[in-house]
Each structure stands twice: as structure tokens, then as C-alpha cells.
Amino acid sequence: MPKEIAIEVADLKKWFPLRKGFLETLMSRKQSFVRAVDGVNFKIKRGEVFGLAGESGSGKTTTGRLLLKLIEPTSGNIYFKGEDITSLPEKGLKPLRRRMQIIFQDPYESLNPRMTISDILAEPVIVQKTASAEVEVKDKVVQILNDVELVPPEEFLLRYPHEL
Image (tube, rainbow, N blue to C red; front, side, top):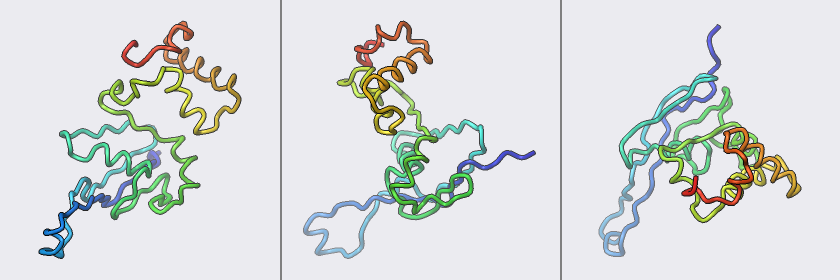
């Protein structure tokens, strides 16, 4: 039985306009762009782990941000389980984002060095409203630390990323 396509990207593009100076604006009518993502196509089957590799500045992070709809594509389509989510309104994106994840090359660099481990782990719990009361949030954070075997969790709650 073939696996279901979880995510499909078709001719995805993200072009950022270059700012022009006053004289450039007067002399030229044509807008210039940085083509951060230009015609990307791929399919990810359910249960697959997908790695996107490339040089610095090649559009890896931009592609991830496009998939999560953190930024709007210039053109192209993004499908999640067969549904075109390219023009899905913000309200419809929250449940989708709960099911998707980007893991950066250096995960320590993606953690805010000014936030404690407790604050970093509590943020998505609060944003996604998977717990509301402060006690529930702390319980979730403790459970997460247990799940990843940072035990005893109480020793890690007030640490900062560089202290792990």
C-alpha cells in the first residue's frame, strides 16, 4: 500500500524586492529581486523525515518559513494532505502548525540565550493553548524535560541554553 503524500510543494517561489535608492528609482523602472526560493518542487510522504541541505543563503530557512506559512510565497502551491494551504487564512493555520516542525542545523543557535529553558519550553504550550493555568504549563514543561531525559527536570528549569 503506497504511503500518503503529507506535504507537496509545487513551483514554490519567494522573491524579495531589493530596495532602490532615489536616483535608481528615477533612472530605472524595473524592480530587482533576490530570488531566495525559485521554483522548488518536492513531495514528503507520511512518516518520512525530510532533510533540506544547501549552502548558506541558499533558501533553506526561507523554504521552511514558507511551509509553515510564516511568510507568504510569491507564487507556487503548498499542499498538506492534499489540501492547498497556500491561501489558507491565519485562523486555519494554527492547527496545521501544531503538526509541522522545523529543526535547524544548529538547534542551540535557534534558542533565545536570554530565556530560561522553562520559558523556552512554555512558550509553545501557551501559544498553542495546550495548557492554560500556570500549574498546567509548568507540569507540561516538566513532562517535556522528562521525555527528553533531562532529569531531574527541576535542575534544568532555570538554566539557560548555553548551560545545557
